[in-house]
Length: 419
Image (cartoon, rainbow, N blue to C red):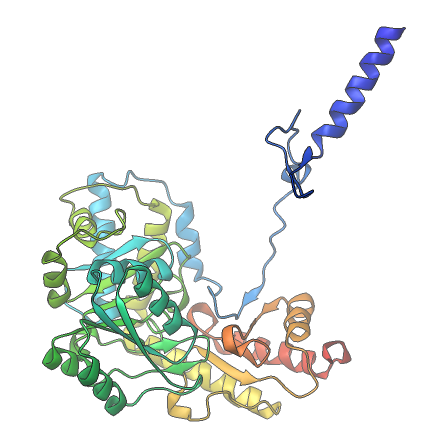
């Protein structure tokens, strides 16, 4: 009988311990998880279906992907280094050349997000002590500045008030004054919705002996990048946003001037997996040093195929029509653009002031809960100041823009979104 009681007590303790960690107090009296967790059981939630349901993704991040890009994940897998994959790699290279408008053979994709591409490009082009000039008119300029500092560059920044952009004369004056090895600009500042033209900047950089790096993440597929025409030395994006794919690959295009700088490096770049010389060798099938996600390659290939079939200019026109439709619809609801000058506004991501008396988080939550439409609020120095609406990729569609406008109208009319 005693054995049975002891057994029940031990069993009860084991079941209790299976659902919690043991905590111990440190010298300051603060509890911390013990290194030992006893009798772990499988998490109960893993026995439930994945709770993902459809929503229209109109936020500043990845959009609702094109169906063909998503369905590519169901295709049979190939080994990433077998001969049949050569055509997939080749299709992606040619598709990216078309998207970036470049003839450069140094066009490929890194593994990771567009921020991975940003870090990779700067890592490959910057050596410690290099003067790097960064133009900042929003969050992503600050990110590039921060990455360059971590690479031990001598970083100099020029700033514009968020919601405005640089003139060529302002950029020219800074380049001539600071004489950088690298000038880094954000072609599309998605946090503020600002479009930064680079006309004349590449010519300036070539005259002054520096490289032009363009964060084109929120531009490719929506605006014309015109890399060769503008003499951009390094441009990058993500496999999502304007390309309408799935997050996970980071397309990069480099000029011969950029490649020459990499070849003259004293030390190799810090990132092994994002060493552009090695990556180019793999994409030209002369070497293989890392494995790619084959479904992600399929998806990117299909995104680029859709752009090729539609035609680049037709793709740009579709995005422009959607942006205008959204602007007209939201203006009719009484909303005011955050970017005052129409020519300074991005195509694909549009920012508006928050209506008086309304809570941006409540608006966002209401639209998602009631209409399955997801939008973004501001962040960084725009936190609590703007609403951000994305109409790119599959969402550059008249019917989907109507759904977005209708959902926002309902949210603004509801007392549930009041402050």
